[in-house]
Image (tube, rainbow, N blue to C red):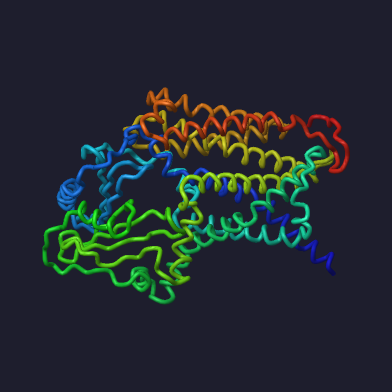
Length: 518
């Protein structure tokens, strides 16, 4: 009975991994790139490589002029302002306007933080694609988030079934037989990496599933409890939204309000949302980055007409419910603790990709030994190599696509998408046509290494900036992308050298012998 139960768990683990493994790999690897969506901005766009002065230009006159121009097009529904930060060193105002014809349009304007001059807007490109592909798979928001959440649920099933199946997994935590057969290498790597990264991989799976399912639960809850009125649900959760009084009032300087908020909180906000502009009940809500605690969207409310502090939701508010939900995004994307946490997340994210890939290889290698392997298994093996190795190639290819397009290009996101899926599909097709998966993997890794290590050269050719000049000018994020590209290129090149050129063993426990090249 015990043996039969173990076999059922094994089958669940194996077939779930085979059916959904590649999907989990795609979500995991895209998440590694999405960690640095903000940090990519200054590398992506040379005009934003700005050293923010200690005393920035007053933003109130700029914002007032923007609102005056925007309201000529219709009624102002929403207004927000991003304040200068390291990844985005500029002012960025965004307004939602309901035009007289009915449709709601978005207006944006950004300014130099020191001079207050207008900075030209650039269409969405590299950083937007990387983040949105991980969150929504570039699909409809609800469908995309649901599929990503599904990958988190499947990953939880794989982790739990793996622990149940491998009861001695913690006893074999240091077992890594790299001198044995290929399949034993995959097997030991799969188990060892899984154990060392277990707590964080569980966290990735749970928080990813949570963030995706929230998008589904909101309309369902609204449908059940509020007869489909999502606005009523949001009001029930966040409280009643302020209503205009119709009494006009002079707006208090947002610069002075920001200084008052700083005295009260002690850290600089990264954005502010403005409600009821020009009304007696107008309000500034200053939001703070979650760098000091595991919480997102800490804020302080200040009256936009009197400058008086109205309310605050900071990290000292008690209650488990209050802390759990806001912490999910912060925890999932490593938005606390600075860049060191993100670097740790990179290692853990790549380890999750390795676990997925080695799990697939264990299953495939067992069925590929000998000359009677079925055509389907061989095709699946080649497809796995093409998807896994080709995704990295496609991810670095879009750096080149974005950088080589002119700043005025309006179809930037379309070109990036075509490049991404075009390179990825070409890699899969190449793997299917190539009869040796090991050589294919070596070649795709080597090609990806060239693209990754070529990022500094690409940046210098297009912008004239190199790593040293970027560091001297204080543009650490842009320089960091170049350095990360070189480091990634070196690692991938070493991996391409280490991977054998042929399948070296016929059986999992035999001594290595040369096999005929398929």
